[in-house]
Image 1 (cartoon, helix red, strand yellow):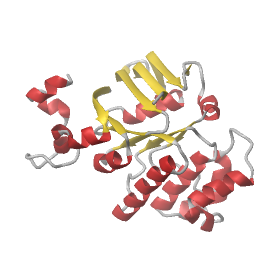
Image 2 (cartoon, helix red, strand yellow):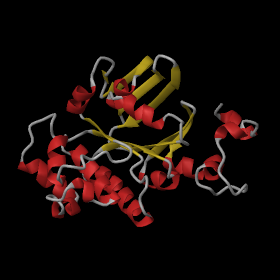
Image 3 (cartoon, rainbow, N blue to C red):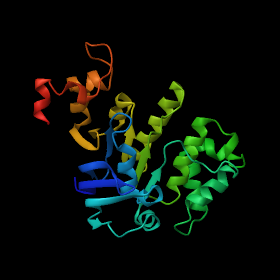
Image 4 (cartoon, one colour):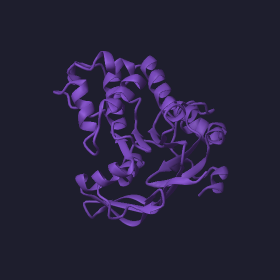
Length: 263
């Protein structure tokens, strides 16, 4: 399938000093869910901000490489324009407007375009729990309900590409199941392409078609979701299924002979 999003040799520096992404390249095919896996500090959230245009808000900048969306170079495109092009990000930690109602939060999600009743109906029909809570102040919602609201708010811009940053973070196991079910339905029912950042590798690979593994700002492994789920290193370091009984990072096992296939 043709790529909807393509990053080539992207480098990102914060405060003109700290190099976070080191020649990162990845492709998100149109119509697929792609999982971006890795430990804390690997650069996953920075990758999403490089795509959505939010790096300047944190004194970050792309210093090399390119980000292209549907064949268009986004180098001089600000965050608001990227939303209008069809890129929407659901931030880590939900970030809802706690003093606004559910419906008012959705209104803010449609700032980039003229929205109407059909847009609200689309979100409420896809996430019916939000419809029942539309008048509730967002700060009084549960964690799972706030995460649904964050997704619903992102859908108001009618994106073609959804960037999801740790959607299961801090949720109880039953809510994690529900959240990954929503991610799957976004793809199968709404036809959305998604780049999913997750530390819950097992669940991410269940809903994704393909994936990438990051370590210290670089891609160290890529493949289909089935290939990654079956990979012995992924099983040990991210799925907790290795013989050692605990997770380790790739950096700790550079002496493994099988790593020479990738590094």
